[in-house]
Every structure is written in structure tokens, then in C-alpha cells.
Figure 1: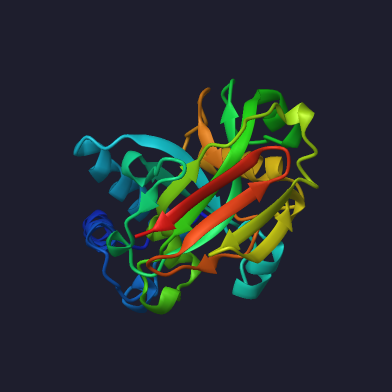
Figure 2: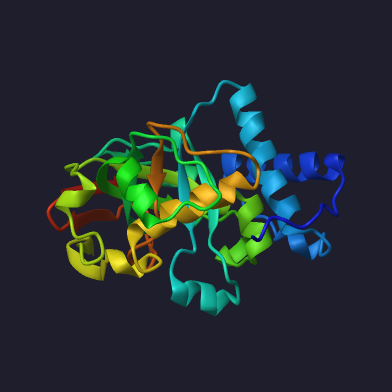
Length: 268
């Protein structure tokens, strides 16, 4: 797995970089990708930076409400020259109510993605988790929209840098209808994204690693490398079914999910 390598950064450097990345997120300003200054850093370092930023948030009273996967399209992985997706955490203040406005000025250069979210009724603990385990452990599936917002200048990064930056997490919306996984054909489940009344993206569940549940299985197995698991009740966003679409202040969006209703919002 990508985070099995030993650390090359010191604990002090990891703490400093966690503060550096988190400050850019909280204050909405661009930074240069951290591998420019620390080319020797490993994937283990990158995840340690992410987990340290998470620890800092929790120490201030922020609640972690879910997890997300990123780079779950084979085409995106090939384009970046990587063989593995990445993950991030979802903080409580990332959540935006269905139909509500998203404050554009709190973000840098946001993009929206159509996703699905899995909510578990049983713990998933890797290694060795597969699609069947995920489907058996899932309570229900529901629509989600993620707003990604890399803190890196011009939205350009490498895999280690984006992992350290919490995989570009910033805001998310969920709602619509929920359904048992056995009542859906998750591979062919279609989505249509509209921005300002115009269809801008369409896609189907199979765009995510061939099957949406494969994304959750991969997350459980990646977390096992840190002796972490996905407990019962976990909310997991699987990664983009559609390409990410850049949005501007004043834009409105609606995403329709076949059989699961729709989600809408506006950037103000």
C-alpha cells in the first residue's frame, strides 16, 4: 500500500506542515505544493500530516463526521501516474444542509463532484475487505455532492501533497433518498449534474473503481495500515462519479441521482 514506507520527515516537520496546510484551509489562501520544499517526504509522511491536522481539529472541539475517498477513477489515476486513490476526513463544519447556500468566500477555487455515500451498520476492519463485505455491512446508500478545494496554487499537486492537504476536502452536502444497497444497481446508477440550469456532467456508479463498494473496501484496507477501522455508523463518500466542475460565486447546481432524488445548492 502507498503509506507503508518509513518516515523521512521529523515529528516537528510533520507538525509544522500540518499547521501550514490547515491554516491555508481555514483562511482560504493558496500555498505551493509541499513536495517542492520537501521532495524526500514519503507517503507515510503525507498521511501523518493529514492525521496531525485532524488531531488538531479534534483538540479544538471539531467533530469528525465521516471519511471520503479521492482519485477513485482509473482514468484520473492513470493521468496522474499513480496506482492508488487517497482518502481524507470530513469535519463537522464541512457539512452544508441540502438546498442551502455555500459561502464562496470561505473557499479558494471550488469544484463540485457528484458522489454516493455509504452508511455502515457494522464495522469494517481490514486488511482483506472486499466488495461483498462492504455490501453486507452497509445500512443504506444516499446521494452526496462534494465541494473539493485544493489549497495548492492553480489546483496543481502531486499525490503526496494532496494527501497532506486532506485530499482537497472542503464542503459536502447529502440528502435526497436513501436505499438499501440490494435495492440498487450501484454500477449502473446514473447521475446528471446541472449548473445554472445546464447539464454539465453525466455518469454512472461504475466510474468509481468499477463498483462504488470497491471504494469503501479500499478505504477500510488503507485504514488498517494505521490500525484504524470504519466503525458502525460511519458515513463514507466514495469519490467522484463525474468529473469535477469548477463553480463561481452566484452559481447554482442540481444533481439528479437515478432512484435517489436530487441535491441542490448555490454558491453565494
